[in-house]
Amino acid sequence: GNTKIYNDYLGHGTHVSGIIAAIDNKGVVGVAPKSKLLILKVIDKHGRGRLNNLINAIKYAMEWVGPRGEKVNVINMSLGGSEANEELHKVIKQARAKGIVLVAAAGNEGDGDINSIEISYPGFYKEVIQVGSISENQTPSKFSNSNVNIDFVGPGENILSTHLNNDYVELTGTSMASPFVAGAVALILKIINSPEPRLNPVYVYDYLLKHALPLENFSINQVGNGFLQLK
Image (tube, rainbow, N blue to C red; front, side, top):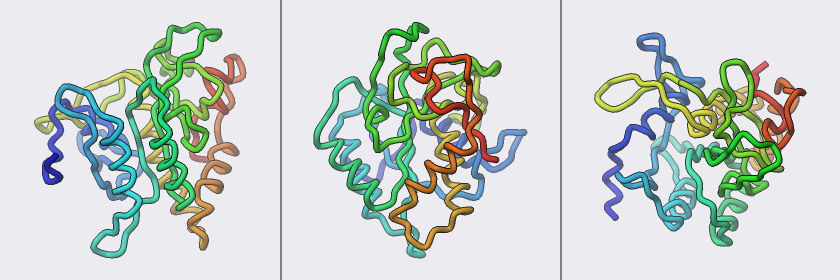
């Protein structure tokens, strides 16, 4: 494909990016407005993506060096599929070993039943921080996948963010919850400022774990370690 074209035809990527990094405008401000984004397109205008695209994007992000020597230190993946894939898992392990924090949406195949399991990759992989969605009342979203590897939950219902044509719209899904965590990770990395970037994923996870708000009324298959908090 043409690597120069990264247009967003659906608005999904623009919305997710705004949750991470929108600069305050009309009251919408991202979690980490000063962060810089490297946008890699893996999903086509029909909302479909191939695993190969995702694998190549992670490899690209791992190797990428910006004009001032910047490196990618957190990857948000508001996407997923039901098939496990060895090649994808391998590249995710490599990225994490390099010190990149990987965050992904848990998926929207949930049915609200805590006893049924819904699995989406790459979120389900242990090396990835898998983020489920909760409502404004801090209850698990019915659509949010439940499984044993959910790490944290973030806001995922009626989230206002940037969209196509300089517009702002509300969208719902674990795709919205994931960038709240990815944006938080960007801020945490600033605080940690570790001399050993390879250990960033461990330090970050530890920070998220210490500060998360436990949602004790719900199954850990739905809420994992709780609701993302920064302090």
